[in-house]
Length: 172
Image 1 (cartoon, rainbow, N blue to C red):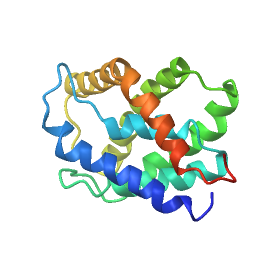
Image 2 (image 1 turned 135 degrees about the horizontal axis):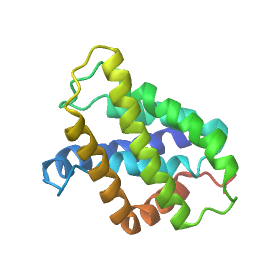
Image 3 (image 1 turned 180 degrees about the vertical axis):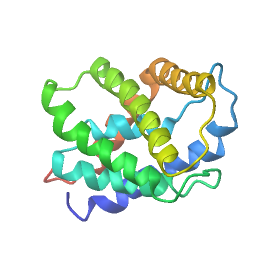
Image 4 (image 1 turned 90 degrees about the vertical axis):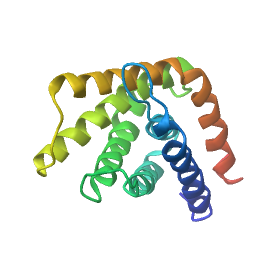
């Protein structure tokens, strides 16, 4: 990743974070919540090269840790999103076809965001944070996966476009 991309990536993820915190967290979604930030992150990482994915995961995790409503230790989202970006870029992306279709990106985004939420809960529980009841946690994860699947025709093309805008002329 070139240094020219870092401000653009930071700006995109900060904008998505502000949209998530200011608007989407105020909506009462049926069955569970929806994290547009997490869904866009997963779709973004699926397009990144291996060497850039971990840096992007760190930036996105750092921004997610800035949430004023987060009651977890600072750095937990950074750990989870950096690890997920490494796993997605090295293992999952290598197993998929080189030209990602919107269906493949949707499936990976839904499962990736669910796994990231589960890892966040597990690592939070290991660090001593209170975890809700099993029914509540299951409902939230299922609700997030359902909304990520239903809203994917909106955010997957937007993520592809934003990703291409951040590429430098040499990377295109």
